[in-house]
Length: 420
Ligand SMILES: *Cc1c(COP(=O)(O)O)cnc(C)c1O
Image 1 (cartoon, helix red, strand yellow):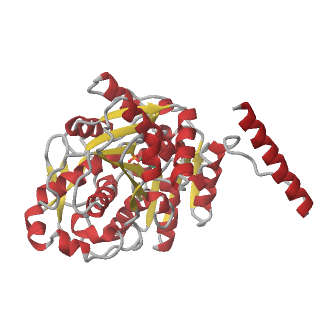
Image 2: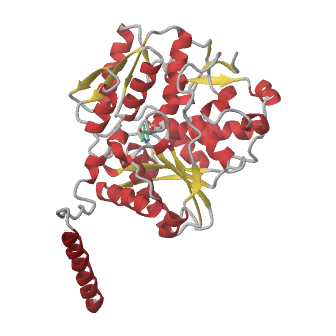
Image 3: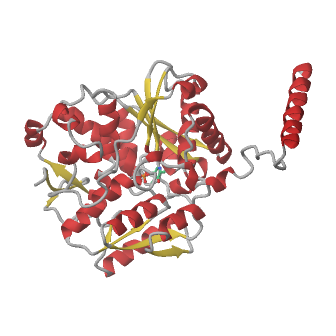
């Protein structure tokens, strides 16, 4: 049995029993999972958690399942490490990277939310799972639903990266590519969800789905020795990850497992789709939806479902937001690759580039403990780098050709020295 106690409306506070419900019947506010913290705080401690499996499931008491997880047993517990060389480049002494680009099984942080929501779908008795996705969720849901023996139906905007399309269709799942942007796909899926008895993991199972994101924050805290960092820079699309990092850290403080939730949270968005960053920078209390136009397709959500709650978390934490151009995104990807040997997708480029701005603005100090959320793998968004990296030298398979190539390089270097 689990420790979640039901659902509560985040707006009016009305309580519900656990069910596949996602909006309040009274006020249409979004629902959130609640727990018996006092009870689980008496049964568990950082020591007992740390003896758990090397996966996100070591935090199962803080996840909304009543039984064992049904899928994704390997998900999570990805590396957190001191990124010294990137830190040197950005002027930060204590810069850490939380690297979900190597998450199991589909190389993004979405593996976390899918593992929880598909397990919950099985608990609720669904035989078909579905989602609206900008790509990474599609990959993960297709993979994990297949592994669980469930039927899956995936809705995507037709213009996402080819690698993310193939990375979904390969599992033999049903994929519907919609002529429209994510916000239109999402609206369509809400209508489909009201007509068909399917578990749309990020729509009608959203309260459970989004809880999976908390494990990203739990792992950061545990891997830092049950401490809270000073800053976390987070890529934002629907703003669920950011909102749940805040909830996760708040829970750890409430349980007394970290001294204090002192983390300042920063939303990182592409300038071509930055409704949350724009609201933060202008001090607005509402999110003005935008029409996305960016190479960071995983973040191209113009009307973020959790935008307002994310705004609240950013303000409460004392954080801020930054947005970066497509060119800066590519520079960010290249900087991380060339300093740390990590190839991240466009969302990671957004995070690195936004961090550089936050440092220059003096919001992040050089001695502060700063964590960058790297959430996806660069192998999936190679289209964005066409023309941005040096092409390989092409030669015939002869030693002569190779020697000629080396001599050419030496001549060029000598010329550069004499010019310099
Ligand atoms: C989905 C996604 C995000 C953002 O997630 P939200 O919770 O919707 O804000 C960040 N990075 C990557 C790589 C993603 O796929």
